[in-house]
Image 1 (cartoon, rainbow, N blue to C red):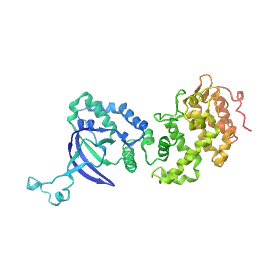
Image 2 (tube, one colour; image 1 turned 90 degrees about the vertical axis):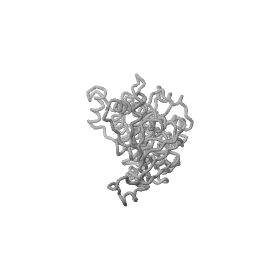
Image 3 (cartoon, rainbow, N blue to C red; image 1 turned 60 degrees about the horizontal axis):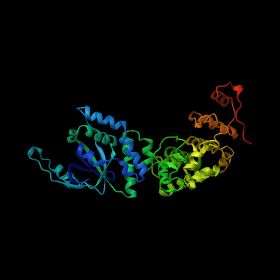
Image 4 (cartoon, rainbow, N blue to C red; image 1 turned 180 degrees about the horizontal axis):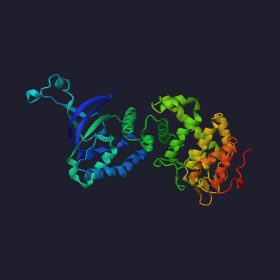
Length: 415
């Protein structure tokens, strides 16, 4: 970007932020401001932000609103400035008519009114108003005359170091939480308070078990195609991390974890929970040798084969990973961590065996059946002797197969 731009502005401060409220033409906004991808150094996650906004129906709706509504109006966008704070040029205030002289008021605010200088070399990215920005870009592609109109923009300085990234990410989440519910994928990508999100990104960026293609960073769903080369999705990985921490690995730290939902933990505590998550997956890999192989060396062939007969693996399906974590959480209510994993080891890890086949695994179609999650969990706990085989479970089992209660028999309990 080239060309210096001067914007009429006010300078203000709030909390630890110095900011500028400026008037900016839509054409300049569209040309100079991009999305919050600068807040995520991982290129895959950064691309998710860009693609989601470009394809967003909300952006299309906003573009139509701008093009078709004469009484259109926007609230202020919040824009981060990377490459140092903007250059500020205050100017003196004076009144042309005696009745307009403000005396001490003018003196007090003398340095707060002026022009904000943008050199054209800095990076500008929207922290609040990303969909509005995307809508503006689309609308100007249809009607360039809209570019003469002005909106108010709040500029805040951003530093690209680790502390700066954390501070600006926090502002992004705070602004968007106040406006509309933050989407789960934004929490996973950007939230600097949410402990599972911090750990998920850290493992995805740095840990060899997860950073070499084992996790699909652009899939936020709880399912994955059988032919996908990745072991699981980032959405399933995040959910599993959250449940593994709170319900399996760290029950004794429930109070601290409640605080962690509102306030970022100290780095040593984040490292502690990160290590617990790694330990969790290490324990699962001890139950499934194919999973250990994929952690040690990404192998799309092993991943795809592990989802197919003759031995489709429970732990190579996001739903299976979710169910296993639920079972461990139930076991942890009355068992130690070691005892819980010892109990889990008794269960089959192949989807072709009871209690999975016919409930979450369609052997005829070689596919998962998502509706069977709850029943499968209950049957696993029954087989372990943790839950009773009461009439409710028998009725649910019979109804699943469309039979009478006296026509079915629950899977055998494990010795």
